[in-house]
Amino acid sequence: MNISTGIVGTTVGPRVHAIDARWLMAYAAALGDAVPDFVDTARPDGILAHPLFPVCYEWPLALDLRAKTLSDDIAIRGVHATHDLTIHRRPRPGDRLSTTAAITAVEARSPGAYVALRFETVDAAGRPVTTTDYGSLYLGVGCEPQPDPLPSRERESDPLSPLGRGQGEGQPPAWSADVAVPANLAHVYTECARIWNPIHTDRAVALAAGLPDIILHGTATLALAVSAVLRRERGGPALPVARITCRFAGMVRLPSTLRVEGWAEAASPEGRVIRFQALAADGRPAVRDGRMTVAS
View (tube, helix red, strand yellow):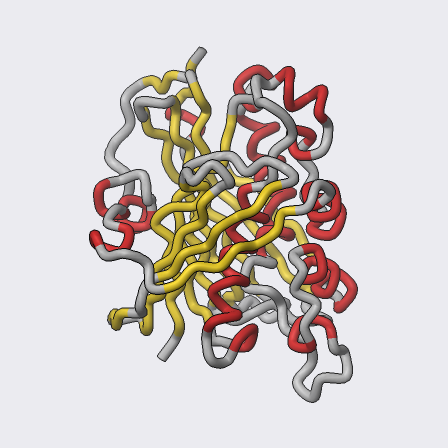
């Protein structure tokens, strides 16, 4: 069972999404983030989008690319492996956003084939809103022929590569916070984010895919961790988040408790960088090598 590198360059879109307050509020509420910045429509500057909200309008294009390039028996083996989101500006109520997606790389890894996608989203005037490099691992799947090395952005942003490692650089975390993951969160997140993958809500499908039970979406796990970081930072939800990167490393069961750990911020050419990770109930990392860059 193999994925051909010939799928590199395949594109889909554009897809246009109308962004309204209802969708933005639902996403934040699903995460337990029903704070005024995210849900108060009387807020003078309008409500804010949660920094991870872009996954909502990107998901349909991920499905389009999967349907266009992969067989069902390979697609079911995919797990979210890496995420690198650049926020040029946050989506706003009333936006009509246009998203295109492309497969940018296919690479052999020891667990399976790594497939990188890039989502580019612009507003009605063609101005950039978000750019995401999204990596999936297809477990037990080969890759042929051997591809060229990943372009520089993918190598640097892919936390599975050596350049992405070094969480906290050997230092203990400066803080931690426990986040409850209720039994119904995967179902609520599915509907509020409009991201449906049956392994997160259909136990029979999850078991057939070799999982121990339904598991929480990777993007939900990352969003919970991001929310925990924002709650500790001055500025909270309104913090000018410019980039979020991470590596997904494990499953989150439901119900359970997620422990989010963070490190002291450091300066970078892009702005302030806050490192974080999220540990599943068994103490193993679910999100590793998390980095939130805050614009200066």
